[in-house]
Length: 503
Image (tube, rainbow, N blue to C red; front, side, top):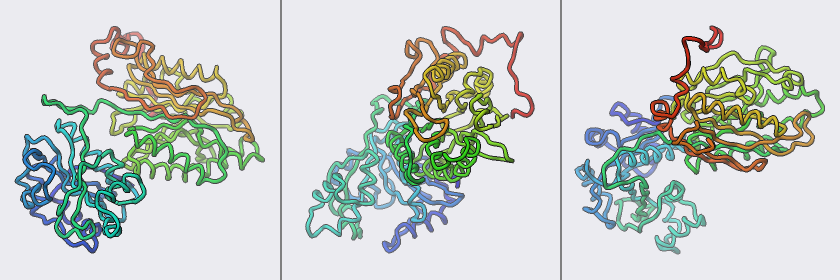
């Protein structure tokens, strides 16, 4: 499945029309092609759609208005200029949402969240004060005999009543300003009431500026080893962390190496070699489910690492499940003596940076980070963030990973994020104890923390670590840093290069 958020095009109209007919089944009213053409002519960057496997599945339309001309007592017809959109004003101060819908076949994918994230990004980029929306309250007709619109909204806010529109808006950081009367003619379900909602742009400045996409938010999962009675329980725990990090708008959610090890418990009667191959049979199911989470929660997920059997060889693979539906992978290259002794794991032979919607990143698994050649090759590919899922049993093993990760950040002018498992796992052979402390490391220069540690978790405690990193600082470091490790290499004396098979 491939999910793409992009600007709407007039060529999308037939697909848009079909999706809207399904989305508003029984309500009547479909946007005319002339309306869409007008919006695209006056404000093309404000019209978004989500394409799923080449099919238009969701849409969001908006205009910019000078809000003081309308105030908080407007109707939908007034704010849209009776559907002429002559109220759109390039030098306005508020992004006004005039439409959002999702085809019912795709509602489980949470596509509306992606559209709202696109609106928020646009609001910041255009330095607009806020986003305002007249939100329908389609379940109100069920309660109108006993509740006023204000009482209904309060109960929805308290989660005592679920409203498909208002509940979603509130969960996406919109707050209710007031109740609008006679907002949308013919809206029987809402009895023509609406909730005026707003999202404030905290970056807004009276002085015009441009926001850049240099800030990337990392979410690291410090995963507690615990038994899971069923796969469903395992997935519940994974989804809990994905949901939590998504709620904080993380761009990446990172799980540790072999985070699915608790599922080995049912194979404890087998040898370690046989048990790991049985666990590998579950990997594809887990990968598919996590890819679905990446799409639904709009976050890139680095699914730690999991065992995979190919041609009777066992590999330790980290899957990057992109939030647009793509899946990339990295195979651990350097195999520890323990992995070789107990599991006969085979090392991978490919090392390359991965393109993401946040720029180029790299993945190395645990022991790999102790070999500086790998991260240098990734840095030469343009990697700016290196992710290291690890699994270490003792503190001295963790210290090796930690200190090498810190060195990789300095020598490659990049950020390095490490995430591991913690706690004990009785009853699973060769997985008894774990020591871990998630952390994000930086180069060591004036623009970064003095100890080169951006943030770190509490050791051996299940938790998440949420960290913002600024890619712009890496660019400045490269050109103006106290030292310039990437530029000052003596390539006349030495170099690192791939062999042909390593691409």
